[in-house]
Length: 91
Image 1 (tube, rainbow, N blue to C red):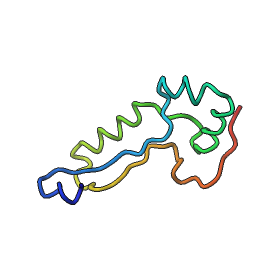
Image 2: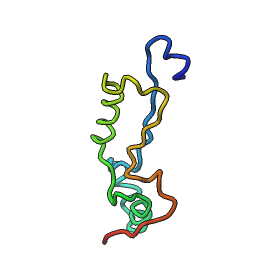
Image 3: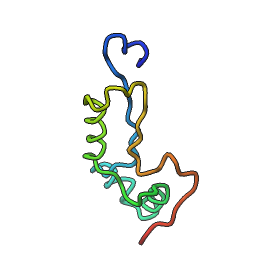
């Protein structure tokens, strides 16, 4: 899509957010202590993301500051993508 649309001046990029502390997440996955530990053990930053953090990345990608970024996926995921193992969870 990025290749097809850039000739029209349309930059296409994507976001790959990690686990974001939405109401749905808090009432489902994070409602279980075991699941909470599983999610956080795979998130090096040690916390859930906030919707505003994802929105900030989207806003950046839509801005002129990102005018040379095309066809990329940005991962506001607290480091989850880089992690091939689990990390200890602070109690």
